[in-house]
Length: 239
Ligand code: 6GU
Image (cartoon, rainbow, N blue to C red; front, side, top):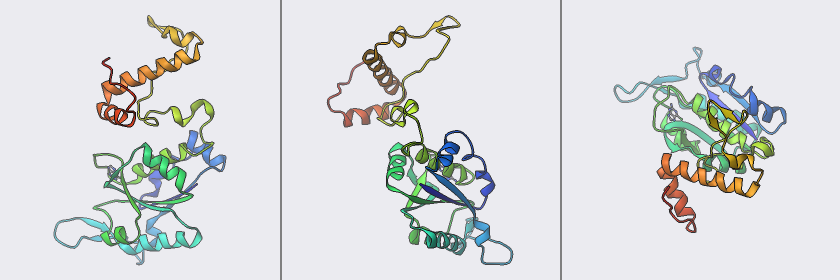
């Protein structure tokens, strides 16, 4: 998968893709991320890409032409299945959207907003999907774009080994992940639960599911409600 990120502060995206799992995905040629500086597509001598909003007191808005020119150049090279605009008024990102983008897209463009946003006509004309990462405001879409790219890349087949399969992640089955432990067996008087040392695989799986359910009921009643709706066979049990 190829992800092209368009930003007016490209330096903010220098490092997230050069470490750990995302770096490995790139090394294994499973993903590539390219960051483009929107300023290079300015259509004036001063490299200006923003201007005053029409109507009073609304701050600066990114102009349509630089965005249009940049995306057009990219589209000359390859087809894009999605052109995503990162904005706090978009659809709230979740694991289902990450899985969907990962499965159904070979190439995607992610446009980062800044200032008071981008000219609405670009959103109407070119953008296929608008994504927010939650109900709070960031100073720009760059960190949000990195989060979306990370979540999409890590579920690509082959990026994670069997050991760390994405299928056991929190949210992948609608439940939070269970607790995990490593050596030593006893730490500050606290023991690792016996069941995990038993070697009894099906019992361990049962225990993990129970712990996932307990955690989800306690911490995320909203997720638990959805889980019950999606699994009518599961009976509500008080814990
Ligand atoms: Cl995508 N952008 C900005 N600027 N703030 C946000 C966001 C995006 N998602 C949540 N807050």
